[in-house]
Length: 291
Image 1 (cartoon, rainbow, N blue to C red):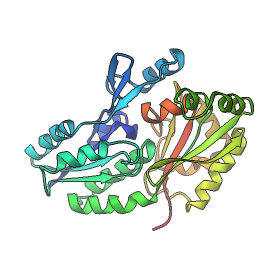
Image 2 (cartoon, one colour; image 1 turned 30 degrees about the horizontal axis):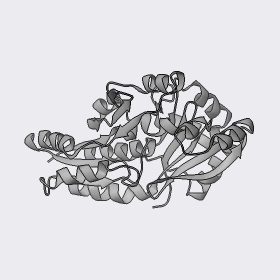
Image 3 (cartoon, helix red, strand yellow; image 1 turned 90 degrees about the vertical axis):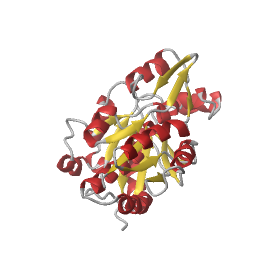
Image 4 (tube, one colour; image 1 turned 30 degrees about the vertical axis):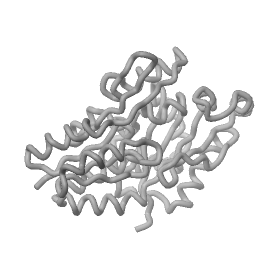
């Protein structure tokens, strides 16, 4: 029996890509004032950043409900398929709890995995699950392999500005002003399901060095596994320039062998991370070489 793969929009997997891969991406509810949108469906990343940057509005988000998960589970089970649901980290959202609550009615038919990730590292894990499904793995086999593989997934990101951390109440106005004056670039990862600032670099050159050091410390990049690059804002132009200037850091040559770098290898990041990153943040997700 084949199985349906479900994730949430914190993965930043575009709906168009999800359709090609046969993945259901459930949208997180995003509210600006009195207006509510479905992340990635009724509000695309560029529309989100238009409100964030030009209107200086910060959104509020709400987790996907058990009822919504149950509806998607029922569709798959009614079609004779199991479900592999891979959610954003339970450390930052109750979405995983909702997915598990809904799965209680489908014992043996639905497997829920807390990815302990979000953003493009969740995207990479979902892409790996698609490979397993397409190789003919059973639901339980795929769930076990994804559960094991999630320990090898990493994401590393450079924020271009501290302004949106300030607007979101994460740092003080004085700290943001001082940091922006000194061109401080926070370098951020996810550790055990939570946001982890591993350093604050002065300037992009030092930030890229910090990224390279992090990749080495975590075991390097396994280019036989899914690999994803992401950006925030209106265009990937800034990130493509960074890649061109730092091909060894971001694995540009290796990436070209696995993906069409001129097409969709670099994906837009939406509300989950974009709210605090602001525009022109860059990120890389990969599986390490530790087997």
